[in-house]
Amino acid sequence: MGIDYSDLHDPNAEYTMRELSAETMGADRERPAPRDLEITDVQTTMVDGNFPWTLVRVYTDAGVVGTGEAYWGAGVPELIERMKPFVIGENPLDIDRLFEHLVQKMSGEGSVEGVTVTAISGIEIALHDLAGKVLDVPAYQLLGGKYRDDVRVYCDCHTEAEADPEACADEAERVVEELGYDALKFDLDVPSGHEKDRANRHLRPGEIRHKAEIVERVTERVKDRADVAFDCHWTFSGGSAKRLASELEEYDVWWLEDPVPPENLEVQEEVTKSTTTPIAVGENRYRVTEERRLIENQAVDIVAPDLPKVGGMRETQKIADVANQYYVPVAMHNVSSPVATMASAHVGAAIPNSLAVEYHSYELDWWSDLVEEDVIEDGSITVPEKPGLGLTLDMDAVEEHMVDGETLFDEA
Image (cartoon, rainbow, N blue to C red; front, side):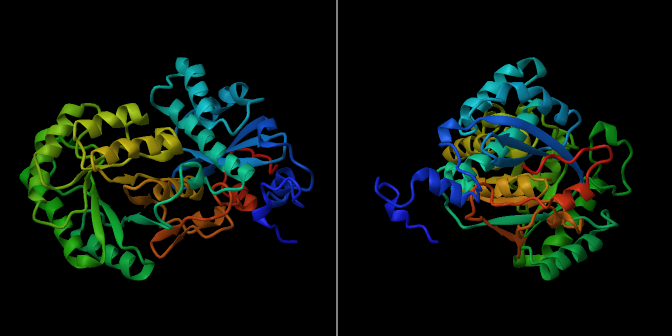
């Protein structure tokens, strides 16, 4: 039987809000009103992907379950286990309050940055999925609605001969032509044959010429068919980073990512302001308090937070809000399973300055098997209208790819 949504506020309507909630969530029993919900459990299962993905589930007394994901890192499941007493019995719709509650309660574990923030992120994402299901809205609606229906995806590319400029160009063309992506990224911290001492972070002239050749071959091969970024993985000294960025100014570089280590923001600012090559930074900073310094000092041209690491969905939106005040776009770093990838897409839909979301698993042929829905198609993600994140875990696939020694979490 169809539901007439125009009658929602009519006290004489055939469906009450509680009955509507029960039907739209597929319940076989009447659910309590949203303010009567309580969290009853939090469970994790780690999946052995190209990174160890920590999937998180939050359970309620109404049988509604939310699924999230925490960035990989040693000790994350144990930290989430430590947090359970702080959320059990709480209402899962109070996402902001529970986030701050966990930050305060876990201060002794270092909740300013690091893996504790990552662990909180996994719970926070699961709460958005759960709240969306309870309220029967997609997660992006909890963030204020959407600017776009589709979120662009950039593919992090690799070859067996990553130091060979021609091999990189061949792979770029293949990914564009065969896989349908119009946004790519390649590594530049690859051996050139000219290294003497990588520990000192200094780039010799031959190393810079080799990296510039990779950039030249790739960008010339794809031309206007794709934007291409290049990742340095925090490898070089400030002076070397400036010389490299200057050498790349003549090419169509989408951005140069993490050219220097993340700790010294003054050096990062100097590098960024020394070149017209766009510089992207952000995956190794935590929460809006740290990302804000990069943005306000204009030390980045593109900010790149990692959503299941930086603090979750609302924290990423806060970062985007600050970035938007400085007209800085957001390109979300992402090495996750479909769960956090879709969470990133919901945020990407809800912020005005979304540039793209990373996809790091194109060589893993079972990545999409973890959920029943399609996620990435033709180089983009169509943000689902289903409640919550809009994903359904395939428990058989999760169990098949669990890290050795892990236990599958409960289905409900």
